[in-house]
Length: 324
Image (tube, rainbow, N blue to C red; front, side, top):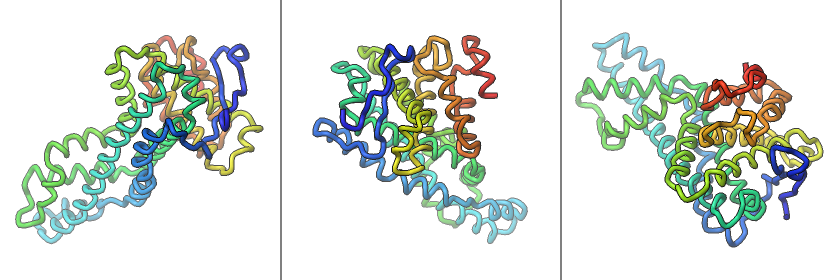
């Protein structure tokens, strides 16, 4: 099957089929091209979004000076002029999350349609599976960066307070045509989340399942659990990790594995942590803990704080203990 090699059969592991997927080289077939092109148009902007977020410095000093000197209009103006371009940038990030949501739903539609089993989809549509993985990789990278930048919420709060008080007169308020009150409300909800991109994808996946009532839920959850198994096997098997052309692929696999676990946990009624789960959670967590702590701290936190069922009574104590 080209770059997708079966490494364990169903009878060899109760958790289901496991695959090695070449995330580095999968190319779209003619059947995949239409969806692949649509999703690629979104993904090609992902690096610039991450670069923009990484370069985000905030207007903390200007805001502090403006608050401490409320009658100094020069300082008010300086703070406002510092915050406005940052708010435009935050709107761009938020807008990208909406595009990513649509891209994810297009991929889910292709990878779960009933003409093939989820496993067959991954075999025949490797390039789409790779794009699915790239969306998850971007999502966790974005959220890891965002959690380290408290200035985002501080800047946006200052912007909203200033607009609502209508304190700034005779200044550039053209920004209101770009970020009106309705847009500001939506952006505020987005950035209030600890992991806003993951929340967007979780909601999008749940919405996809609820809107496609004729599609068996298992088509979606099996797609996610199979992808988790793909990544776990790749990460724990030196024979396969040695094939990676780049060390970054190791971190890529870890992020994708965590991302699909979180989506599975939000979509499956019982979640990812029960004994009946098709995801080997102990194995997945062990794989993460075997990596350098700096590489996985954010991922372990994502499992702790953005999953839905971790603290359910049905979650084995051993799994909860692994994430303490």
